[in-house]
Image 1 (spheres, rainbow, N blue to C red):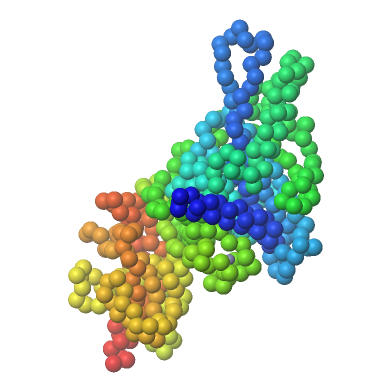
Image 2: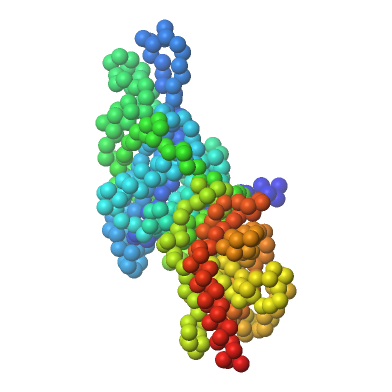
Amino acid sequence: MQSFVLHNFRARWQAAEYRNCQANFPSGTIVSAIDFSENYTFKVQNEVQTLHWVQKQVTLLVLITSRHRTYDPDIVNATDIENRDIIQDYHFYFSDDNTHDTLMVQHYLDLHWKWMAENGIRFNKHIMWSDGCAAQFKACRPFYFVSRYYHTYGVPLMWCFHASGHGKDKGWYPHDGLGGGLKTALAQEQLKGIDGHKLDCAADCVAFLSEKFRLHREKLYGGINEVRRFFWEVKVGDVNRSKRYDCLPIEGTRKLHCFHGFSRLNSTLLNVREMCCFCPSCIDEDWENCNNLEYTGPWTLHNVHPRKPADVVDYVDAIGHGQGIPDQSDEGTIADLVEVGDFFAVEAEWPNDYSVEFWILQCTKPLHVLADTTTDAYGETHEEGSSVLEGMWYQQFGKSPTCFIQYPSAPVSVVAAGQVIHVRFALQPTGVLKGNPSFKLSKDTLEGILDSLQRYYVQRIYNY
Ligand SMILES: [Zn+2]
């Protein structure tokens, strides 16, 4: 009962935020809603009844996108109702490929992005809504797509999941109705027999429907908007399934409904939270002042961990080898350069159990001043008023000094800002070692860190 009530709350919350999102998204943002419609089964016509019985189907994916007619991310009050001039595009993707998997979805979204680029449609943020179907949308491989999107397409992607998933629950989605209307048109055409269009594959559907349905004006999301329909045929074999982008599962995703691929440089980073919110602060990405923090929960950093080197998207070149502490000690700390998701190196006090000179952490909370004296899960105590960062710990592994692993369940460390020696470098995923995500530091980065460590010691000697 308890979980039913909770589920009900989540479903209603997400449905309300979907409406908020549609009503308030600013210029420059694209809001999409995506869903598979039920497959259409071709009626077998008289002349083929004597042949083998073949029940042939086409798959149909419906993608609805909304955007402001004017691209101007600087418009103040872009959310004023009078200023909203919204264009909606309906994309219908037909295919004889009957595999509804995440790679098919990724292929469609790739086509969609290329179409926007070719048509000069500019945007600086993409918000996607779907149900929580694990095979297609809500699982580790789709999440990896979300975290790669910024890196691949140059725009951050936030994927929002409805908590309701089944059948009539989907009242807020027009997809079934839209797909259903098209299928009725197909069925009616087929009833005409040889007097109608030939309809027995995806290409036929696209040719027939493109002719029949052109520009439409429809009432949707409470307003009359210009709606354009586009019909696409995706041929069998078009979906590239050779690279699967396999990765480790992310735990606890059932209760998470908002996934933000926020890093352009690191294609494995995700910020996640329980519920979506499109209050004025969240629209401005001023997350700390969200009106609904108690319902949405805080953003938490997650890493997608590719299983094999072949699943990794290379990003080391884009980041470079990092930045060390400056020569002059009075130039202050480099800790304030560290953002959530960044890797940074800190001096390791001697002696330590691992006989290492430095630790590598990934920032989960940037530089801040402690309001109270705090002891972290490893027993490190930091006094009230001291400047610290929080991060997940990466451990050097095996004989190679450039090989690291992460224990995803290890608690975060709190470290003093003054111990930070090197920032803004890449730790490239390499797959999985003994069940744990593994990483590689480039040789240049390792040298950079050791140089920084040297300067750190020199400065400390002078300061004492
Ligand atoms: Zn909010």
